[in-house]
Amino acid sequence: MSLRSTINWLITLVMLLFIISLAALEIESSRLSIAAEMEAATRVTVQMLANLVSNDQARNGDGTTAGLVSYLEHTGRIRAHDIEVDSNDGKSLYRSPPSPYKAGRSAPQWFTVLVAPTVATTTLTVGNGKVNIRPDYSRMVLDAWDDLLHVFWLSLVLFTLVNLLVFWFAGRALRDNRSWMQLIQRHIEDERRNLALELHDEVGQSLTAVKTIATTLANRTRDKQPELHAAAQMIVDVSARMYDSMHGMVRQLRPLVLDQLGLQAALQELIDAQQNHHPEIRFTLAINGDPGKANAEVAIAAYRMVQECLTNIARHAAATKANVSIEAKDHLTITVEDNGRGLRADPNDRSERFGLIGMRERTEALGGSFQWHGENGVKVVVSLPLQATENS
Image (cartoon, rainbow, N blue to C red; front, side, top):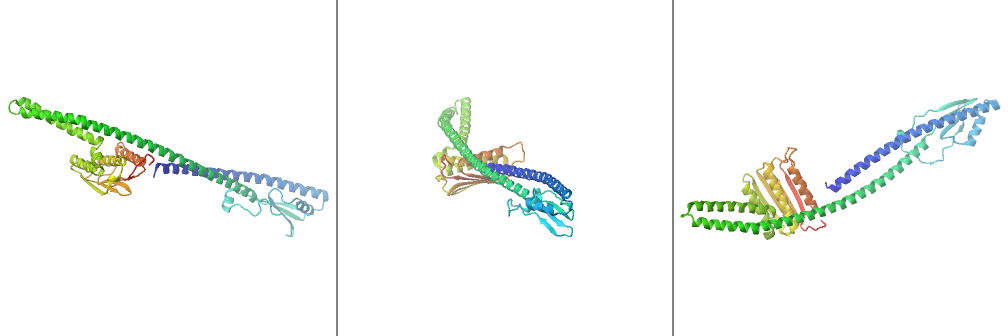
């Protein structure tokens, strides 16, 4: 998973947790609010109707429900309550009309279960009948549901905008970072090339001259001056070792054969050098296609990645085989795998992991992809575009 996708997934997770928390707070607040409102409304309604019945009976003394029914028919619904007036023989004398507020709509059942309070029907005895006062919380629950929907849609819009902005800023930042990394790598390789050329042309020629002079001196003094011959031969041997060491440094800094003969020859030289230094490991190179189609920047990146992988194998893998495969078609695909012990179990030694991280960053800077597996040996697969540009 790319860094850009990882950032977006993290932002998505944080936003989802925020939305869920906000919804939970909204539901809890609605539940408490509805319960308090219904309790207060029921208390007021019961007290009002009880006073009305008491006053009517005191004024008329008839002990009937006629006055109450007349009042309720004139008033209509009272504070979100369903009111029923029945005679003692069970005959219905009055039923509250349905609420016109948001008529025809209701909140989902699951939401109603979450926020609806526990209510009880209050019954008042009125002369020759009774009044049943039943709290109706459905409109309050519907209001709470609409408020939750508003919060949800607002959160969804905010969630979408934040993800788009993060995706855009992360992409822009990563593009800038890759451009800088590509520029830095280009300058590093230029400096390595210049230093390698200086070593090869100046130091190499000087060492060759010293070796030639010492060889000539050794040949002339072999029989006549044994002591001088031994010193001259020592200079020949030391200069030869210095030349070999310098040649190895040049190859590490910049494989000159890469500029002269191309990637395939440079990789073959690298494989041969590793085979000479580590005969206990069998190194193989397989090439399919023409890696020469890759431009110079991709070629040196591919060479460096193979070089890093082979160095890690030689130092850490305890492997007996190391296979390098190059496929040049639409992309330059590099596969390096070994039969070693995989990544080191020592958490204090992270050189291999850091090397893999560096290869991943270099690959992504060129617009390629990088994968690795480290269970049974280590397998690294790199895919690079054949032509890298500054905007890769």
